[in-house]
Amino acid sequence: MELSEATAVLAGTPAVLEALLARLPDGWARRDDGPGTWSAYAILGHLRHGDATNWLPRTRMILNEGTARGFEPFDREAMLRTAPVPVTALLAEFAEARRASLAELAALNLTTPDLVRRGRHPEFGEVTLGQLIASWVAHDLTHIGQASEVLARHYREDVGPWRAYMPALNGTAPAE
Figure 1 (cartoon, one colour):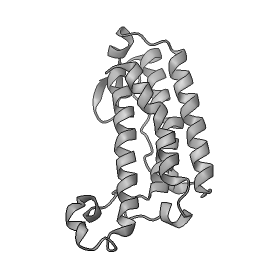
Figure 2 (cartoon, rainbow, N blue to C red):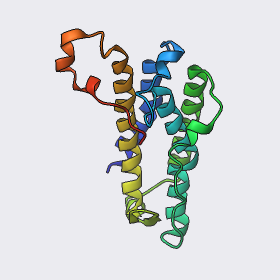
Figure 3 (cartoon, one colour):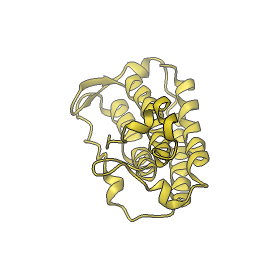
């Protein structure tokens, strides 16, 4: 896990989602695949919530406490209980949260030895800081793909026979 590469991907996520969602009709961004699934809007809210409550708090815990105390469980569906705002407002909130997260991460001046420091995950047991940061990157990329697929399914029936070449149209965007 290379920290500079990881932060480059993390820094790009808000722009990718801005390009994907900012000009869509609000209803399209909020369309999901049915019960137990997420819309692109919910995915965006999930990513914003993660920046506020998950990645940096866990990073600080590893650096300050190691394995002495385990991570707080992450509420993966907290965004579903917040008051809805326009997509453009949520995009702006996420972009600001990500800028703040990356500024704080940079201010930690992490070294290669820091990346092998350990914390305690409630489900997985001991994990390293490098694994946590790599998971942050993979989490972003996974959800970008998930948001793209749920948006594509808006045209699931409209593509006609081409659906045979678009396997994403046959799936759903299950809650993480």
